Length: 200
Length: 160
Image (tube, rainbow over all chains, first blue to last red; front, top):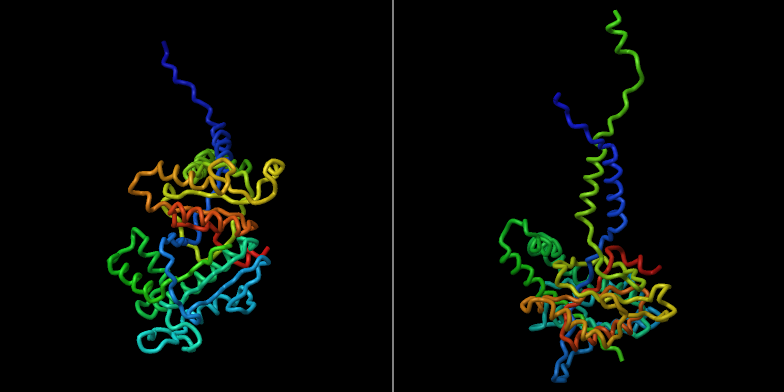
């Protein structure tokens, strides 16, 4: 018998099949958002010990039910909040032991002593919308980041966010222990002290 | 000289589409790899607010998701228009959160429990009252690491 070659399979419809699958995956894909603001809730403490904090070291931010901002008993626009928070944190009005040699603020004795003592107190009402709350949180975190970036730039010539990104980067070349130390140092100099008042 | 004349004759040759399947397959593989199948069907409106000081949430298996938002239209007759909590696939009450956290913890290895993060996926129009209640529940359960999931973007987008 004569040798017969096998007939070729028509591959013309391959593209159609692939397109079908492609469209299915295109439609079902949801790129999940996995970014956000990380926060830590305060643990519930048994002992109700009152800590005395000087009024000047507290920066009160109140968001009311109509999404208006009351900062230090004054009405404020959202866009001014970051600057006001930076000014408060970086004031460095303390003297002697409470002094702050790296602060660049106005050193107003009526405002915070040093960044370690400065506390931002955030209060909201039940009717406050979530978007305003997130905006305010974002601005306050931005204020801290701004100061930390500035300090990192002074000390190590790089921004704080860059240092953190490097720390998380697996491919980064360099000593991670040293980097961690640097990050911790800046975190100590500008600690995030954001306290949220519990709603009634 | 018919040899030369032959070449000149004819229109443009058809473009070969033989590599089309390859291109399509390439795209297909990209989407197959990039696809994350949603494990929860959302029964609520969930339009996240924007923020620009965001951090990335890594280790997806160590995240518990709590969704909050207004029920979508087909559930409104049953659950009303007020913001509701959704845990897994069901609508839940504030009091269900403790059980949810306990169940999530039980499904993870013990040494990983301290690293569990609660991601709050909250619709921008929700009221803070409900969020405050959730936070209080989480504090009582000692699940203190939370993440307000947001889109990356300027906060001015939140005003609309």
